[in-house]
Length: 154
Image (cartoon, rainbow, N blue to C red; front, top):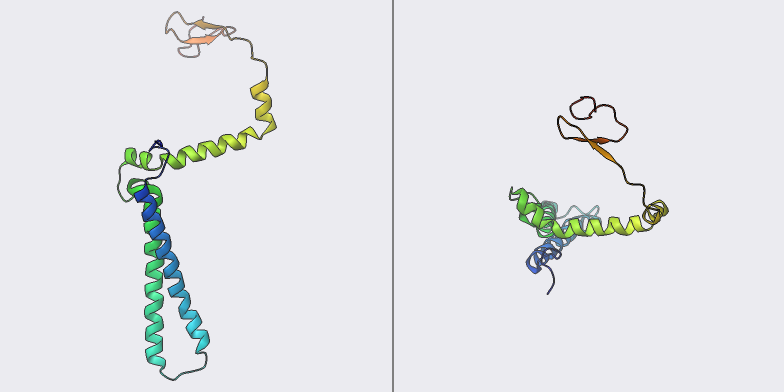
């Protein structure tokens, strides 16, 4: 069974695709105004009815594009991840699949960088010796003469 933290739920996927479909239909509705205008260019018969119809289609098309974009964002990011519900913990859960994907893509990209490859194959460095301050118990470098935490002489 797939880990639910790594996948977007089927309900959210459906909301996302409904939003995308709504945006596409809105774009086509809005674009049809320009096609109608081009087809009737210079023809002023029945101008009032046609202009009312085109205005209505353009407003409905814009509203559908905006509504579709909002719906797709809620489907993609979840209610909290898109900011509809103000709950940072739930937003983190909603965005978990995308954060994991971004981390995976970053790791894939870093695997291709020669400098990172050289770092991972380099010999281990010498161990650092630390000295504990007698007053504040902070750890300091072996060569330090004064504590980096409280400033007292070591």
